[in-house]
Structure formats: C-alpha cells, structure tokens
Length: 353
Image 1 (cartoon, rainbow, N blue to C red):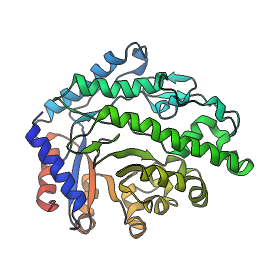
Image 2 (cartoon, helix red, strand yellow; image 1 turned 90 degrees about the horizontal axis):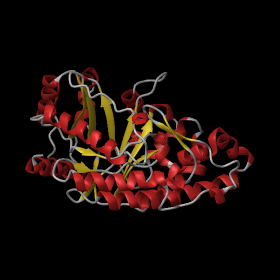
Image 3 (spheres, rainbow, N blue to C red; image 1 turned 60 degrees about the vertical axis):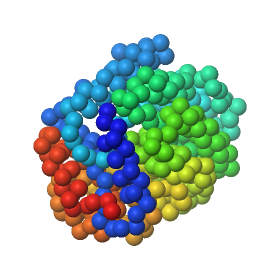
Image 4 (cartoon, helix red, strand yellow; image 1 turned 45 degrees about the vertical axis):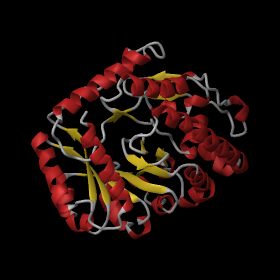
C-alpha cells in the first residue's frame, strides 16, 4: 500500500468536508465488472472456530482486488472489517444466530416489548467477539497492507425490530411506552457496542473508516442506518426514532448515515439530525432511482453531504447538480479503463479546492 498516496487521499477527504466550495466531489469506484470477486460462503466456515481463516480469506480477496486496481486514482482508502451478515447488528445482545450462504439471521428474542431482562450487554457474547476481535485481528495482522475499519451498526429502530420480529410494528399502537423503553435500551447498547469497534479499529489519519468504507474526521459512527423508516410513518420516526438517533450522534464527532429511497417521506427528518456529515441514499426496487428521489427533496436534505451510487449516464445527465454542491459518488465501472476515465473526469471537473 502506497502510504504517501493514502495520506493524499485522506488529506483530500478532510479538505472536502472542510470546504464550503460548491462543485467538489469524491469518487469511489465500488465494482469493476471485468474484475469480479467471487463471494465467500459463510456456511463453509464454522464460527467462531474459523474466524481467522475466514478473515484471512476476506483479506486475500481485498489484496487481490487492490493489485488489479493498482494505478486507479479514485478517492478510496482500502479497508476491511469482519462481515458475518445482518445478525451481528443485534445478536451481540443475545439470541440464536443462523448462518446462510451470504448472510445471517437472528431469531426474535423478545416475546413482548417489556422483556428487557432477556437482553444482556455481555463482553463474552460470541457475536460481539467475532466482530470486535475480528477488527483487532485484521488491524494487527494486515498492518501496512490495508486499513482497519468499523463494521458499523443498525439504528435503534432496526435493532428493536430484529429483537421483536414483526410484532415490533404492533408495539407502536399496543404498547408505545414499553417500545420507547426498548428503544432507549437499544440506543445505549448500540453506543456500548460501537465504542468497542472504534477501540479495536483505532484512528486512520486522524479519523475513522466507517462500516461502508467512508472516512470521517475524528471519532465517527457509521454506518448508522434507518432502514425501518421504509415501513413506518414520518410521525412515528419523529416520535420514536429521531430522538434516539440524535442522542447517538451526539456521542461522536460525526456520523455516516445509510438510508433508502423508499424512506423518501422520512428523509428530511433524518437529514436534519445534527452530527450527520454524510448520508447515503440507496436505490430500491419499485421506486425512482435514488438520485431522482434526492433531487425531489434536495432543499430538505441540504445538511449532510449526499452519497449517491450513480451510473455513467446519471453522472453525465446530472453535471449541473454535481457542479452546484458537494457530493460523494459511488461508481460501478464496466472495466479498468472506464474506472480510470471516470477518475480523470472527476479530478478535472469536480476538484476539491
């Protein structure tokens, strides 16, 4: 890993967040179609026994991808964290975890919203140790080859949804006071869990590489996610979710937020939370592309830097938008030449200054 080059990327990213100049953009090439990386199968490993073997296999994939991309001048800091599927965002509080080939699930733990005694913030919890010890292992074992990063966390709403299962949605109506207590517990537990991830990952160039690979200055939390807002009203988010997300964000220097286009009705409420420096908007089936949802709500989403996954056509048709604001663009290239051409275009048209 070219540390001088990585320092330059970090310096550029810091300058990007500090400047008020419009027309600046960062480009992160996420995928290159001609350089596919076969996915690892979680069921090929026996956790926790095979944790290190699994993480070594993940590291080998990243190092291979880095070698293939050598010379690509985008704004990516190569980093890796453990990834065992979605269950790890709540299973650190207890419960059974089932692994599939490409993700994991946690069975509902709570029969009702009042059952907090079934949950525990236990440092010996297997799911917690797989994540925290895994981050520490990657940091020590691969120092100088790529950077450590945090795994990230769900929001309090998502955690409560997983712990309760689908009955969670009845709680808004049948036992809202108990639900609020459960959500407070989840928010407290989330900070407790993420602080351990931060300690294991350490600082990178004076900042944090968060769960989606985005560097933020200082002790940053990310990714935080508000996926549950796709299934509840804005009023419910304002009453049950927003106060706790805001409380979580105040515990850190900055936050990276993951959202969905299907949450369009709640995006302005999320974006207005202090401390969120960047907000990624994912596209979803059966709705408009994320960039179109963003443009419809642009004024209401003016706080955080938008993070948008754009095609070449979307970049070309939204030049004026990119020239008028700061944006982080995720891009899937067709080949290495396409990736290099796009990196040169961004350096020329959307410089950080």
